[in-house]
Image: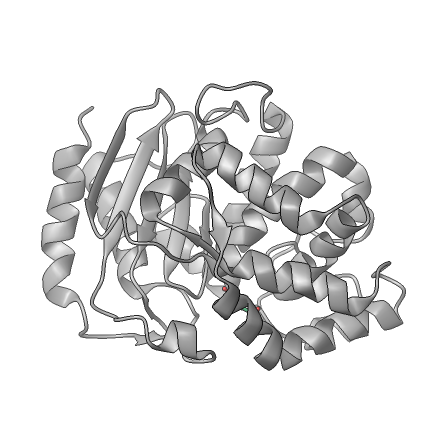
Length: 304
Ligand SMILES: NC(=O)CC[C@H](N)C(=O)O
């Protein structure tokens, strides 16, 4: 199937809606000043064909989409031992909520809420230079150098009061092994990864290839079983507390970030990345979700 006309149509349908609804994340200046009137979409099929439209080559802050890749690293390194510290249930609460952690003795509900990703960062830090390992993974998957936006990382650290609270709270339950400061330094840097839609569609392509390297390189990124689990977690927990609605209206495993990006997977077919900075009330990209809905409607591709 030639996907280029499909992406061009989606771009043409959504462009007139740019700037009409939603709000750009405002909690740090580097995100608040991103012009809202941008939309990009890119895909890579499991056979390596690519298509893109709109602002697919504009780099943005991938924010919580990074949680998908740090989880991949941790699953690959630790196998099932990872799940002693982190659950696999949707939280039904905002991504930075503290309330469940106390009832559940500092064990985060899933790896895609902030508490879960901070716990994953702690695991990665116990095993080496986590920031270097993250950059190495992202650059290897995307096939070109990927970097951190140091301004975003510094602002995340300067304003990340809730994330400090989450990390300290977990530490008080003995669920974080390292000092809180270096763990959060990893977390703030992963949030500050800067990538384009095309780079993200490539980097996540192993999810549509049963774990095989996106660019055909060796070794595989993870096993087929781990890939199924990553996709399952994306479907149930990847879009914060909108995951049920997203499964209902789009029906694809997705992981979103407050920078306005969303990665979506059609297993055994392709990976999509969409970006538009204006967010809805749940913190997901408004036009990004709309684009995915249109893509599924136009192609009939869905996991259901
Ligand atoms: N959901 C997100 O993309 C949140 C990331 C943001 N940096 C935070 O930690 O709050």
